Picture (spheres, rainbow, N blue to C red):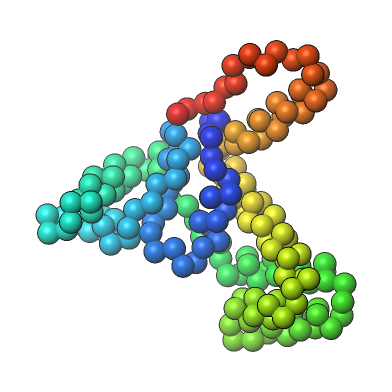
Amino acid sequence: MMNLPVDLDEVARLMADDRQVNQCFLDLDAGAIVLVSTDVLVRTQNGYPLDDLPEWQQREGALCREVLSEPSRYFSIIRVTDDAVLGMMRAFLKEVDKKQAERMLRAALEQDEPIDEFRRQLQSLPWLRVKFFHYEEKARREWAEGWLASLGAALKHQEMAALCQDKEKNPAADDSAEYPLGAQ
């Protein structure tokens, strides 16, 4: 198990971003997120020359070759499925205490584009929209934590939380103790 300084919120955002046009990878050696354009990645995978591309894309090609040559180091950040998002939205309905609002949102989930329609309906319910955004943020973090755990990565923020709890219990703890950052 590795200790990685992973930006959990960024991983969660990328997992939930269905508009992302880049390919996103997690570098398990550094905990860094690596973004490469899909076009350059596909050209590199297929062995097409990159000479006709601008210099910055040629440099990106070198990064793509590195990502492709070390599959045990770079893991493609998965995208959350629409089914998972719909499940989260259905679970949120249990948190809605006004029946009319719940009926509106439940009906939205029966439309042709349920995710978009659910979000449109939330626009007319500002008091509930805020509550949903907090609920969604928590779900995204849980998805990201689950995915990272499946990679065998121990999150630095979890260790930091434990360290903070220890300091609360023992305020006289030595502040100069070196914190193990793991692989960087």
